[in-house]
Amino acid sequence: MEFRSCSIIHMLESCFLLLIIFQFAEGYDPVDPNGNITINWDFQTITDVYTVMVRIYNFQLYRHVEPPGWRLSWAWAGDEVIWAMTGAETTEQGNCSRFRGETIPHCCENSPVIVDLPPGTPYNMQVANCCRGGVLSSTTQDPIKYASAFQMVVGNANARNSTVEKPSNFSIGVPGYTCSDAVDVAPSKFRHDNRRTTQALKTWQITCSYSQFRESDHPSCCVSLSTFYNNTIVSCPHCSCGCQSPITAPQCVRQSPYFLHLLNGDDGSTTLPVVMCTQHMCPIRVHWHLKLNYREYWRVKVTITNFSVRQNYSNWNLVIQHPNLRRLTQVFSFNYRPLIQYGDTNDTGMFWGIQYYNDMLLESGENGNVQTEMLLQKDPAEFTFKGGWAFPRRIYFNGHECVMPPPDTYPILPSGCSDARRFVRRYFGMSSLLLFFALL
Ligand SMILES: *[C@@H]1O[C@H](CO)[C@@H](O)[C@H](O)[C@H]1NC(C)=O
Ligand SMILES: *[C@@H]1O[C@H](CO)[C@@H](O)[C@H](O)[C@H]1NC(C)=O
Ligand SMILES: *[C@@H]1O[C@H](CO)[C@@H](O)[C@H](O)[C@H]1NC(C)=O
Ligand SMILES: *[C@@H]1O[C@H](CO)[C@@H](O)[C@H](O)[C@H]1NC(C)=O
Ligand SMILES: *[C@@H]1O[C@H](CO)[C@@H](O)[C@H](O)[C@H]1NC(C)=O
Ligand SMILES: *[C@@H]1O[C@H](CO)[C@@H](O)[C@H](O)[C@H]1NC(C)=O
Ligand SMILES: *[C@@H]1O[C@H](CO)[C@@H](O)[C@H](O)[C@H]1NC(C)=O
Ligand SMILES: *[C@@H]1O[C@H](CO)[C@@H](O)[C@H](O)[C@H]1NC(C)=O
Figure (cartoon, rainbow, N blue to C red):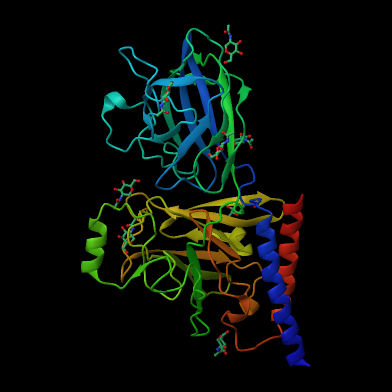
Protein backbone atom coordinates (compact mmCIF):
# COMPACT_ATOMS: atom_id res chain seq x y z
CA MET A 1 0.00 0.00 0.00
CA GLU A 2 2.65 2.47 1.10
CA PHE A 3 4.75 1.68 -1.97
CA ARG A 4 1.84 2.32 -4.28
CA SER A 5 0.97 5.68 -2.78
CA CYS A 6 4.60 6.70 -3.13
CA SER A 7 4.71 5.99 -6.85
CA ILE A 8 1.45 7.85 -7.36
CA ILE A 9 3.08 10.78 -5.62
CA HIS A 10 6.05 10.60 -7.94
CA MET A 11 3.72 10.59 -10.89
CA LEU A 12 1.93 13.63 -9.53
CA GLU A 13 5.26 15.34 -9.04
CA SER A 14 6.08 14.86 -12.72
CA CYS A 15 2.72 16.36 -13.58
CA PHE A 16 3.57 19.27 -11.34
CA LEU A 17 6.77 19.88 -13.28
CA LEU A 18 4.83 19.76 -16.54
CA LEU A 19 2.43 22.30 -15.11
CA ILE A 20 5.33 24.64 -14.39
CA ILE A 21 6.61 24.31 -17.93
CA PHE A 22 3.13 24.91 -19.31
CA GLN A 23 2.77 27.96 -17.12
CA PHE A 24 5.86 29.53 -18.64
CA ALA A 25 4.70 28.88 -22.16
CA GLU A 26 2.06 31.47 -21.31
CA GLY A 27 4.78 34.12 -21.12
CA TYR A 28 3.12 36.27 -18.48
CA ASP A 29 5.20 37.33 -15.51
CA PRO A 30 3.07 37.20 -12.34
CA VAL A 31 5.97 38.63 -10.33
CA ASP A 32 6.00 41.92 -12.27
CA PRO A 33 2.74 42.16 -14.23
CA ASN A 34 3.08 45.90 -15.02
CA GLY A 35 6.81 45.85 -15.71
CA ASN A 36 7.86 47.46 -18.98
CA ILE A 37 10.54 49.52 -20.66
CA THR A 38 9.11 52.87 -21.75
CA ILE A 39 10.70 55.01 -24.46
CA ASN A 40 9.69 58.68 -24.69
CA TRP A 41 10.40 60.94 -27.64
CA ASP A 42 10.27 64.43 -26.16
CA PHE A 43 10.28 67.07 -28.91
CA GLN A 44 12.35 70.12 -28.00
CA THR A 45 12.16 72.10 -31.25
CA ILE A 46 10.18 71.57 -34.44
CA THR A 47 11.08 73.59 -37.54
CA ASP A 48 12.31 72.21 -40.84
CA VAL A 49 14.36 69.93 -38.66
CA TYR A 50 13.36 68.72 -35.23
CA THR A 51 15.23 68.03 -32.03
CA VAL A 52 14.16 65.11 -29.88
CA MET A 53 15.37 63.93 -26.52
CA VAL A 54 14.86 60.17 -26.46
CA ARG A 55 14.55 58.80 -22.94
CA ILE A 56 14.50 55.10 -22.08
CA TYR A 57 13.11 54.10 -18.67
CA ASN A 58 13.33 50.60 -17.23
CA PHE A 59 10.09 50.40 -15.23
CA GLN A 60 10.67 46.81 -14.19
CA LEU A 61 10.94 45.71 -10.60
CA TYR A 62 13.81 43.29 -11.02
CA ARG A 63 14.78 42.73 -14.67
CA HIS A 64 17.58 44.88 -15.91
CA VAL A 65 19.34 45.34 -19.22
CA GLU A 66 22.75 43.73 -18.94
CA PRO A 67 25.84 44.22 -21.11
CA PRO A 68 26.07 44.54 -24.13
CA GLY A 69 23.15 46.87 -23.43
CA TRP A 70 20.20 48.15 -25.47
CA ARG A 71 20.34 48.62 -29.26
CA LEU A 72 17.41 50.80 -30.17
CA SER A 73 16.15 50.65 -33.72
CA TRP A 74 13.15 51.75 -35.79
CA ALA A 75 12.15 52.27 -39.41
CA TRP A 76 11.65 55.87 -40.60
CA ALA A 77 8.33 56.64 -42.26
CA GLY A 78 9.90 58.70 -45.06
CA ASP A 79 13.24 60.14 -46.09
CA GLU A 80 14.38 61.24 -42.64
CA VAL A 81 18.05 61.52 -41.78
CA ILE A 82 19.68 62.08 -38.41
CA TRP A 83 21.78 65.24 -38.69
CA ALA A 84 23.35 64.98 -35.27
CA MET A 85 23.29 62.82 -32.18
CA THR A 86 24.57 63.46 -28.65
CA GLY A 87 24.90 60.85 -25.90
CA ALA A 88 24.62 57.89 -28.30
CA GLU A 89 25.51 56.98 -31.87
CA THR A 90 24.18 54.92 -34.75
CA THR A 91 26.07 51.77 -35.64
CA GLU A 92 26.10 52.64 -39.37
CA GLN A 93 26.19 55.97 -41.13
CA GLY A 94 24.64 54.53 -44.26
CA ASN A 95 24.60 56.02 -47.73
CA CYS A 96 24.76 59.81 -47.40
CA SER A 97 26.12 60.36 -50.90
CA ARG A 98 23.21 62.58 -51.92
CA PHE A 99 24.43 65.24 -49.44
CA ARG A 100 27.19 67.31 -50.90
CA GLY A 101 27.11 70.35 -48.60
CA GLU A 102 29.46 71.21 -45.80
CA THR A 103 27.70 69.06 -43.27
CA ILE A 104 27.02 65.40 -43.82
CA PRO A 105 24.32 63.76 -41.64
CA HIS A 106 25.24 61.49 -38.76
CA CYS A 107 23.07 58.73 -40.27
CA CYS A 108 21.13 58.24 -43.50
CA GLU A 109 19.92 54.69 -42.84
CA ASN A 110 16.24 53.96 -43.31
CA SER A 111 16.36 51.70 -40.21
CA PRO A 112 18.98 53.20 -37.89
CA VAL A 113 20.37 51.18 -34.97
CA ILE A 114 21.40 53.32 -31.99
CA VAL A 115 23.79 52.28 -29.23
CA ASP A 116 24.76 54.06 -26.03
CA LEU A 117 28.25 55.51 -25.65
CA PRO A 118 30.62 53.88 -23.14
CA PRO A 119 31.34 55.32 -19.69
CA GLY A 120 34.10 57.92 -19.79
CA THR A 121 32.81 59.65 -22.94
CA PRO A 122 33.99 63.31 -23.08
CA TYR A 123 31.54 65.74 -21.47
CA ASN A 124 30.85 67.66 -24.68
CA MET A 125 29.43 64.46 -26.20
CA GLN A 126 27.16 63.67 -23.26
CA VAL A 127 23.61 64.44 -22.20
CA ALA A 128 22.21 63.74 -18.73
CA ASN A 129 21.80 59.98 -18.12
CA CYS A 130 23.75 58.91 -21.17
CA CYS A 131 26.88 56.92 -21.63
CA ARG A 132 26.56 53.80 -19.54
CA GLY A 133 27.12 51.32 -22.34
CA GLY A 134 23.37 50.71 -22.66
CA VAL A 135 23.06 49.12 -19.25
CA LEU A 136 19.84 49.79 -17.34
CA SER A 137 19.31 48.94 -13.70
CA SER A 138 15.88 48.09 -12.29
CA THR A 139 13.79 50.76 -10.58
CA THR A 140 14.09 48.92 -7.28
CA GLN A 141 17.84 48.68 -7.29
CA ASP A 142 19.05 51.99 -8.60
CA PRO A 143 16.86 55.10 -8.78
CA ILE A 144 19.28 56.82 -11.18
CA LYS A 145 20.68 54.17 -13.48
CA TYR A 146 17.29 52.84 -14.53
CA ALA A 147 17.08 55.58 -17.18
CA SER A 148 19.10 56.32 -20.30
CA ALA A 149 18.89 59.22 -22.76
CA PHE A 150 20.24 60.71 -25.98
CA GLN A 151 19.43 63.70 -28.15
CA MET A 152 19.09 63.80 -31.92
CA VAL A 153 18.40 66.31 -34.65
CA VAL A 154 16.24 64.86 -37.40
CA GLY A 155 15.61 66.28 -40.84
CA ASN A 156 13.46 65.24 -43.72
CA ALA A 157 15.88 64.81 -46.57
CA ASN A 158 13.47 66.06 -49.22
CA ALA A 159 13.94 69.65 -48.09
CA ARG A 160 11.46 71.87 -46.31
CA ASN A 161 8.68 69.53 -45.31
CA SER A 162 8.02 69.92 -41.62
CA THR A 163 5.49 67.09 -41.35
CA VAL A 164 6.61 64.92 -38.48
CA GLU A 165 5.64 61.34 -39.10
CA LYS A 166 5.97 58.52 -36.61
CA PRO A 167 8.55 55.84 -37.31
CA SER A 168 7.51 52.20 -36.91
CA ASN A 169 8.97 48.79 -36.10
CA PHE A 170 10.62 49.75 -32.81
CA SER A 171 13.00 47.33 -31.10
CA ILE A 172 15.36 47.67 -28.14
CA GLY A 173 17.53 44.81 -29.34
CA VAL A 174 17.43 42.83 -26.07
CA PRO A 175 16.22 39.20 -26.25
CA GLY A 176 12.70 38.65 -24.92
CA TYR A 177 11.24 42.12 -25.53
CA THR A 178 8.72 43.34 -28.07
CA CYS A 179 7.83 46.99 -28.52
CA SER A 180 4.59 48.76 -29.35
CA ASP A 181 4.11 51.45 -31.99
CA ALA A 182 4.68 55.06 -31.02
CA VAL A 183 1.58 56.77 -29.63
CA ASP A 184 0.91 60.41 -28.74
CA VAL A 185 0.77 60.98 -25.01
CA ALA A 186 0.52 64.09 -22.84
CA PRO A 187 3.76 66.09 -23.21
CA SER A 188 6.39 65.20 -20.59
CA LYS A 189 6.91 67.81 -17.89
CA PHE A 190 10.22 68.68 -16.30
CA ARG A 191 10.59 70.30 -12.92
CA HIS A 192 13.70 72.49 -12.81
CA ASP A 193 13.48 73.88 -9.32
CA ASN A 194 10.67 74.65 -6.95
CA ARG A 195 9.38 77.48 -9.10
CA ARG A 196 9.40 76.52 -12.76
CA THR A 197 8.21 73.54 -14.81
CA THR A 198 8.79 73.19 -18.54
CA GLN A 199 7.30 70.74 -20.96
CA ALA A 200 8.12 69.05 -24.23
CA LEU A 201 6.43 70.43 -27.37
CA LYS A 202 4.97 67.00 -27.81
CA THR A 203 5.74 63.46 -26.69
CA TRP A 204 5.52 60.08 -28.36
CA GLN A 205 5.68 56.95 -26.29
CA ILE A 206 6.72 53.38 -27.05
CA THR A 207 6.30 50.54 -24.55
CA CYS A 208 8.43 47.40 -24.66
CA SER A 209 7.45 44.37 -22.62
CA TYR A 210 9.25 41.20 -21.68
CA SER A 211 8.15 37.62 -22.11
CA GLN A 212 10.11 34.66 -20.76
CA PHE A 213 8.69 32.63 -23.60
CA ARG A 214 10.17 34.88 -26.28
CA GLU A 215 13.61 34.77 -24.72
CA SER A 216 14.75 31.48 -26.21
CA ASP A 217 17.98 31.69 -24.22
CA HIS A 218 19.22 28.56 -22.55
CA PRO A 219 19.25 28.69 -18.72
CA SER A 220 22.05 30.59 -17.03
CA CYS A 221 21.67 29.52 -13.44
CA CYS A 222 20.79 26.53 -11.30
CA VAL A 223 19.85 25.69 -7.72
CA SER A 224 21.38 23.23 -5.25
CA LEU A 225 19.99 22.29 -1.83
CA SER A 226 21.14 21.01 1.54
CA THR A 227 19.75 20.69 5.08
CA PHE A 228 20.91 20.35 8.66
CA TYR A 229 18.91 17.15 9.11
CA ASN A 230 20.20 15.09 6.19
CA ASN A 231 23.77 15.18 4.94
CA THR A 232 22.80 14.61 1.33
CA ILE A 233 23.67 17.65 -0.81
CA VAL A 234 21.37 17.84 -3.79
CA SER A 235 23.48 19.41 -6.49
CA CYS A 236 22.32 21.25 -9.57
CA PRO A 237 20.86 18.89 -12.18
CA HIS A 238 23.46 17.60 -14.66
CA CYS A 239 23.69 19.70 -17.79
CA SER A 240 21.36 22.41 -16.36
CA CYS A 241 22.88 25.02 -18.65
CA GLY A 242 24.74 22.81 -21.11
CA CYS A 243 26.87 19.70 -21.15
CA GLN A 244 30.62 19.42 -21.08
CA SER A 245 31.66 18.42 -24.53
CA PRO A 246 34.75 19.16 -26.56
CA ILE A 247 32.73 20.24 -29.58
CA THR A 248 29.56 22.04 -28.56
CA ALA A 249 29.08 25.34 -26.79
CA PRO A 250 29.27 26.62 -24.12
CA GLN A 251 32.99 26.37 -23.71
CA CYS A 252 34.38 25.73 -20.27
CA VAL A 253 37.73 26.10 -18.60
CA ARG A 254 39.50 24.18 -15.84
CA GLN A 255 40.47 26.27 -12.88
CA SER A 256 43.83 27.54 -14.04
CA PRO A 257 44.63 31.10 -13.02
CA TYR A 258 47.14 31.42 -15.87
CA PHE A 259 44.61 30.40 -18.51
CA LEU A 260 41.98 32.65 -16.96
CA HIS A 261 44.43 35.50 -17.09
CA LEU A 262 44.95 34.87 -20.80
CA LEU A 263 41.22 34.79 -21.42
CA ASN A 264 40.62 37.98 -19.51
CA GLY A 265 43.47 39.55 -21.40
CA ASP A 266 41.90 39.16 -24.84
CA ASP A 267 39.61 41.82 -26.23
CA GLY A 268 36.48 39.99 -25.04
CA SER A 269 35.02 39.96 -28.52
CA THR A 270 33.75 36.39 -28.24
CA THR A 271 30.12 36.48 -27.19
CA LEU A 272 30.03 32.90 -25.88
CA PRO A 273 29.80 32.81 -22.10
CA VAL A 274 32.92 31.12 -20.82
CA VAL A 275 32.27 29.19 -17.64
CA MET A 276 34.26 27.02 -15.28
CA CYS A 277 33.88 23.31 -15.99
CA THR A 278 31.19 21.89 -13.71
CA GLN A 279 28.62 19.15 -14.15
CA HIS A 280 25.90 21.82 -14.48
CA MET A 281 27.89 24.28 -16.68
CA CYS A 282 25.98 27.29 -15.35
CA PRO A 283 27.67 30.65 -14.85
CA ILE A 284 25.70 31.08 -11.60
CA ARG A 285 24.71 28.61 -8.88
CA VAL A 286 22.36 29.46 -6.03
CA HIS A 287 22.63 27.23 -2.98
CA TRP A 288 19.78 27.03 -0.44
CA HIS A 289 20.82 25.58 2.91
CA LEU A 290 18.37 24.92 5.73
CA LYS A 291 20.65 25.92 8.53
CA LEU A 292 18.92 25.99 11.88
CA ASN A 293 15.63 25.24 13.53
CA TYR A 294 14.51 27.32 16.50
CA ARG A 295 11.25 27.02 18.35
CA GLU A 296 9.50 29.87 16.58
CA TYR A 297 11.93 30.64 13.78
CA TRP A 298 14.05 28.89 11.19
CA ARG A 299 17.16 30.05 9.44
CA VAL A 300 18.20 29.68 5.80
CA LYS A 301 21.55 30.45 4.24
CA VAL A 302 21.62 31.39 0.56
CA THR A 303 24.90 31.43 -1.32
CA ILE A 304 25.39 32.70 -4.87
CA THR A 305 28.49 31.41 -6.61
CA ASN A 306 29.93 32.89 -9.79
CA PHE A 307 31.32 30.33 -12.26
CA SER A 308 31.57 32.77 -15.12
CA VAL A 309 34.99 33.71 -16.36
CA ARG A 310 34.33 37.09 -17.85
CA GLN A 311 30.72 38.10 -17.31
CA ASN A 312 30.45 41.24 -15.17
CA TYR A 313 27.62 40.71 -12.70
CA SER A 314 27.67 44.10 -11.06
CA ASN A 315 24.23 45.00 -9.68
CA TRP A 316 23.01 41.41 -9.61
CA ASN A 317 19.66 40.49 -8.09
CA LEU A 318 17.87 37.39 -6.94
CA VAL A 319 14.12 36.78 -6.87
CA ILE A 320 12.90 33.99 -4.61
CA GLN A 321 9.44 32.52 -4.22
CA HIS A 322 8.65 30.75 -0.96
CA PRO A 323 5.38 30.81 1.02
CA ASN A 324 7.14 31.70 4.28
CA LEU A 325 8.67 34.93 2.91
CA ARG A 326 5.64 36.80 4.21
CA ARG A 327 7.01 36.15 7.68
CA LEU A 328 10.57 37.09 6.86
CA THR A 329 11.96 38.65 10.02
CA GLN A 330 15.55 39.50 9.22
CA VAL A 331 17.89 39.44 6.21
CA PHE A 332 21.63 39.68 6.70
CA SER A 333 24.09 41.21 4.19
CA PHE A 334 21.58 41.68 1.32
CA ASN A 335 18.93 44.28 0.56
CA TYR A 336 15.40 42.92 0.45
CA ARG A 337 12.06 44.01 -0.91
CA PRO A 338 8.83 41.95 -1.11
CA LEU A 339 7.46 41.87 -4.68
CA ILE A 340 4.09 40.19 -4.97
CA GLN A 341 1.70 41.49 -2.36
CA TYR A 342 -1.99 41.06 -2.94
CA GLY A 343 -4.64 39.27 -0.96
CA ASP A 344 -3.12 36.22 0.67
CA THR A 345 -0.22 36.11 -1.76
CA ASN A 346 2.98 37.57 -0.41
CA ASP A 347 5.46 34.88 -1.25
CA THR A 348 7.98 36.48 -3.61
CA GLY A 349 10.82 38.81 -2.77
CA MET A 350 13.84 40.40 -4.35
CA PHE A 351 17.34 40.35 -2.86
CA TRP A 352 20.28 42.39 -4.06
CA GLY A 353 23.76 43.38 -2.96
CA ILE A 354 24.79 46.21 -0.70
CA GLN A 355 26.75 48.85 -2.58
CA TYR A 356 30.55 48.61 -2.27
CA TYR A 357 30.13 45.50 -0.09
CA ASN A 358 28.74 42.68 -2.20
CA ASP A 359 27.03 44.26 -5.22
CA MET A 360 29.70 42.74 -7.48
CA LEU A 361 30.00 38.96 -7.58
CA LEU A 362 33.59 38.03 -6.95
CA GLU A 363 35.71 35.39 -8.56
CA SER A 364 34.55 31.91 -7.74
CA GLY A 365 36.74 30.09 -5.29
CA GLU A 366 36.90 29.81 -1.56
CA ASN A 367 35.70 33.29 -0.79
CA GLY A 368 34.37 34.03 -4.25
CA ASN A 369 30.69 34.05 -3.50
CA VAL A 370 28.09 36.21 -1.82
CA GLN A 371 25.96 34.97 1.03
CA THR A 372 22.95 35.92 3.04
CA GLU A 373 21.18 34.38 5.97
CA MET A 374 17.55 34.96 6.66
CA LEU A 375 15.43 34.41 9.66
CA LEU A 376 11.84 33.36 9.04
CA GLN A 377 9.08 33.11 11.58
CA LYS A 378 7.17 29.84 11.53
CA ASP A 379 3.53 30.00 10.61
CA PRO A 380 2.10 27.14 12.73
CA ALA A 381 -0.66 26.54 10.18
CA GLU A 382 1.69 25.54 7.39
CA PHE A 383 5.29 25.30 8.57
CA THR A 384 6.98 21.92 8.11
CA PHE A 385 10.42 20.60 7.28
CA LYS A 386 8.75 17.60 5.69
CA GLY A 387 8.05 16.96 2.07
CA GLY A 388 10.25 19.72 0.68
CA TRP A 389 8.05 22.55 1.94
CA ALA A 390 11.09 24.44 3.26
CA PHE A 391 12.74 24.67 -0.16
CA PRO A 392 12.19 27.54 -2.58
CA ARG A 393 9.50 27.17 -5.22
CA ARG A 394 11.29 29.26 -7.80
CA ILE A 395 14.46 31.34 -8.08
CA TYR A 396 15.49 33.90 -10.69
CA PHE A 397 18.98 35.34 -11.01
CA ASN A 398 19.07 38.67 -12.88
CA GLY A 399 15.60 37.90 -14.20
CA HIS A 400 16.49 34.49 -15.63
CA GLU A 401 14.80 31.50 -14.08
CA CYS A 402 17.16 29.02 -12.43
CA VAL A 403 16.96 25.27 -13.02
CA MET A 404 15.74 23.51 -9.84
CA PRO A 405 16.54 19.90 -8.92
CA PRO A 406 13.53 17.59 -9.42
CA PRO A 407 11.37 17.41 -6.24
CA ASP A 408 11.84 13.65 -5.89
CA THR A 409 15.55 14.16 -5.20
CA TYR A 410 15.04 16.66 -2.33
CA PRO A 411 16.66 15.67 0.98
CA ILE A 412 13.95 14.01 3.05
CA LEU A 413 13.35 13.66 6.74
CA PRO A 414 13.84 10.05 7.78
CA SER A 415 10.07 9.57 8.32
CA GLY A 416 9.55 9.01 4.60
CA CYS A 417 6.63 9.28 2.29
CA SER A 418 3.53 10.06 4.31
CA ASP A 419 4.05 13.82 4.30
CA ALA A 420 4.93 13.99 0.66
CA ARG A 421 1.23 13.73 -0.08
CA ARG A 422 0.62 16.98 1.74
CA PHE A 423 3.52 18.51 -0.17
CA VAL A 424 2.08 17.51 -3.51
CA ARG A 425 -1.33 18.83 -2.54
CA ARG A 426 0.21 22.17 -1.61
CA TYR A 427 2.21 22.33 -4.79
CA PHE A 428 -0.82 21.48 -6.84
CA GLY A 429 -2.95 24.03 -5.05
CA MET A 430 -0.38 26.69 -5.69
CA SER A 431 0.36 25.98 -9.31
CA SER A 432 -3.24 25.68 -10.35
CA LEU A 433 -3.85 29.02 -8.67
CA LEU A 434 -0.97 30.57 -10.60
CA LEU A 435 -2.15 28.92 -13.77
CA PHE A 436 -5.53 30.43 -13.16
CA PHE A 437 -3.95 33.88 -12.84
CA ALA A 438 -1.82 33.33 -15.90
CA LEU A 439 -4.86 32.45 -18.00
CA LEU A 440 -6.82 35.50 -16.86
C1 LIG B 1 4.68 50.85 -17.88
O1 LIG B 1 5.16 51.03 -16.55
C2 LIG B 1 4.72 52.25 -15.94
C3 LIG B 1 5.41 52.36 -14.60
O2 LIG B 1 5.19 51.22 -13.83
C4 LIG B 1 3.22 52.25 -15.83
O3 LIG B 1 2.79 53.48 -15.26
C5 LIG B 1 2.60 52.09 -17.21
O4 LIG B 1 1.21 51.98 -17.11
C6 LIG B 1 3.15 50.83 -17.89
N1 LIG B 1 2.68 50.80 -19.25
C7 LIG B 1 2.10 49.73 -19.76
C8 LIG B 1 1.63 49.84 -21.17
O5 LIG B 1 1.96 48.69 -19.12
C1 LIG C 1 23.66 55.83 -52.59
O1 LIG C 1 22.51 56.63 -52.83
C2 LIG C 1 22.51 57.20 -54.15
C3 LIG C 1 21.30 58.09 -54.30
O2 LIG C 1 20.96 58.71 -53.12
C4 LIG C 1 22.48 56.09 -55.19
O3 LIG C 1 22.55 56.66 -56.48
C5 LIG C 1 23.67 55.17 -54.96
O4 LIG C 1 23.55 54.06 -55.85
C6 LIG C 1 23.69 54.66 -53.54
N1 LIG C 1 24.87 53.87 -53.33
C7 LIG C 1 24.84 52.64 -52.83
C8 LIG C 1 26.16 51.97 -52.67
O5 LIG C 1 23.79 52.10 -52.52
C1 LIG D 1 5.37 66.04 -46.47
O1 LIG D 1 5.75 64.67 -46.58
C2 LIG D 1 4.69 63.74 -46.37
C3 LIG D 1 5.25 62.34 -46.51
O2 LIG D 1 6.57 62.28 -46.16
C4 LIG D 1 3.60 64.00 -47.40
O3 LIG D 1 2.51 63.13 -47.14
C5 LIG D 1 3.14 65.43 -47.33
O4 LIG D 1 2.20 65.69 -48.37
C6 LIG D 1 4.31 66.38 -47.48
N1 LIG D 1 3.87 67.76 -47.30
C7 LIG D 1 4.27 68.75 -48.09
C8 LIG D 1 3.74 70.10 -47.76
O5 LIG D 1 5.02 68.58 -49.01
C1 LIG E 1 11.32 45.36 -38.58
O1 LIG E 1 12.53 45.05 -37.86
C2 LIG E 1 12.99 43.74 -38.06
C3 LIG E 1 14.25 43.54 -37.24
O2 LIG E 1 14.47 44.57 -36.34
C4 LIG E 1 13.28 43.50 -39.55
O3 LIG E 1 13.67 42.16 -39.73
C5 LIG E 1 12.04 43.79 -40.34
O4 LIG E 1 12.33 43.66 -41.72
C6 LIG E 1 11.53 45.18 -40.07
N1 LIG E 1 10.28 45.43 -40.78
C7 LIG E 1 10.04 46.57 -41.42
C8 LIG E 1 8.71 46.67 -42.07
O5 LIG E 1 10.85 47.45 -41.47
C1 LIG F 1 31.62 45.96 -14.13
O1 LIG F 1 30.66 46.94 -14.51
C2 LIG F 1 30.61 48.08 -13.65
C3 LIG F 1 29.55 49.02 -14.15
O2 LIG F 1 28.66 48.42 -15.00
C4 LIG F 1 31.96 48.77 -13.62
O3 LIG F 1 31.91 49.84 -12.70
C5 LIG F 1 33.02 47.77 -13.20
O4 LIG F 1 34.30 48.38 -13.26
C6 LIG F 1 33.01 46.54 -14.09
N1 LIG F 1 33.95 45.55 -13.57
C7 LIG F 1 34.79 44.88 -14.34
C8 LIG F 1 35.67 43.90 -13.66
O5 LIG F 1 34.82 45.05 -15.55
C1 LIG G 1 4.77 40.87 2.85
O1 LIG G 1 5.90 40.29 3.49
C2 LIG G 1 6.88 41.23 3.93
C3 LIG G 1 8.00 40.45 4.56
O2 LIG G 1 8.55 39.60 3.59
C4 LIG G 1 6.28 42.22 4.92
O3 LIG G 1 7.24 43.18 5.28
C5 LIG G 1 5.10 42.91 4.27
O4 LIG G 1 4.47 43.76 5.19
C6 LIG G 1 4.09 41.87 3.78
N1 LIG G 1 3.02 42.54 3.07
C7 LIG G 1 1.74 42.21 3.22
C8 LIG G 1 0.74 42.96 2.42
O5 LIG G 1 1.39 41.30 3.96
C1 LIG H 1 33.07 36.18 -11.86
O1 LIG H 1 34.15 35.33 -11.71
C2 LIG H 1 35.09 35.42 -12.75
C3 LIG H 1 36.12 34.42 -12.47
O2 LIG H 1 35.56 33.24 -12.14
C4 LIG H 1 35.67 36.80 -12.84
O3 LIG H 1 36.56 36.90 -13.93
C5 LIG H 1 34.58 37.75 -13.04
O4 LIG H 1 35.09 39.05 -13.06
C6 LIG H 1 33.63 37.58 -11.91
N1 LIG H 1 32.60 38.55 -12.08
C7 LIG H 1 32.62 39.69 -11.41
C8 LIG H 1 31.51 40.63 -11.67
O5 LIG H 1 33.46 39.95 -10.57
C1 LIG I 1 18.43 12.05 2.92
O1 LIG I 1 17.77 12.32 1.69
C2 LIG I 1 18.06 11.37 0.69
C3 LIG I 1 17.53 11.89 -0.65
O2 LIG I 1 16.26 12.40 -0.60
C4 LIG I 1 17.48 10.04 1.09
O3 LIG I 1 17.74 9.08 0.09
C5 LIG I 1 18.15 9.60 2.41
O4 LIG I 1 17.55 8.44 2.88
C6 LIG I 1 18.00 10.68 3.47
N1 LIG I 1 18.86 10.37 4.60
C7 LIG I 1 18.37 10.08 5.79
C8 LIG I 1 19.37 9.78 6.86
O5 LIG I 1 17.18 10.07 5.99
